[in-house]
Length: 266
Image (cartoon, rainbow, N blue to C red; front, side, top):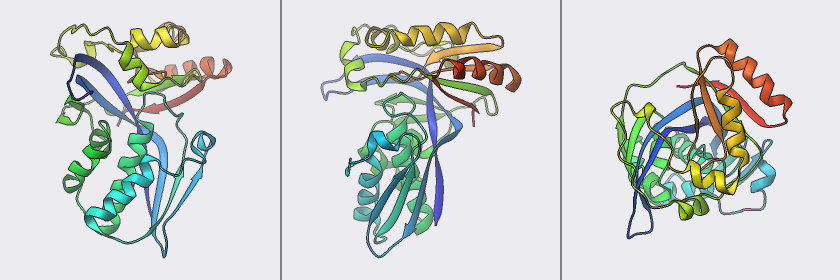
């Protein structure tokens, strides 16, 4: 049995440059990943099976065609390997801007690759076909992403930095957030991408105003540095100057009944 962590993905910056003729958007983003996420386990089996557990399993239950099962089928079509028993412990909220399904698909590919001796680089094209964020999640390292996000340039990160993720319990449609983007190109990532912005925050806040409340509350916490919404929302995060200040902030948000994840950048 092989176990992989589907690490939550953060966009430390996300600049939307243009709408493309193929329906996608031209992006420049700084991907980062945290230690925690969903848990994917894969084992050889006589027949295919998929089991779903975890606090957010109910949102996906009954969906027989998800990114995990699609990744497994695509892997077998390309590399073989037979049938597998796959389980997903769904610990991250769904439709929350932190890579959820993409990270799960990437973790499934990594597990299958380890099981059948297939290198990450050999699975890149397959990951790209599964979704724009899947290649970044496949490698799980801090990187600048361009194009749809699949053109990756690894960069030095902030490994070990304490970070707090907060989600107010609102699912936001990625497609709707992109649809509401105003189409204005506000420029490329700066030399230090962390000083950039998230161009999807205004349309996401228009859909779910509580995102602004989360961001303001995070920025007010002692020790908080970089505060931003991740992806298309609604999860927001703050980097902290110490684990102690992060944990103190975590208690504040937990009392509100919001989903929180105290963790570290990898």
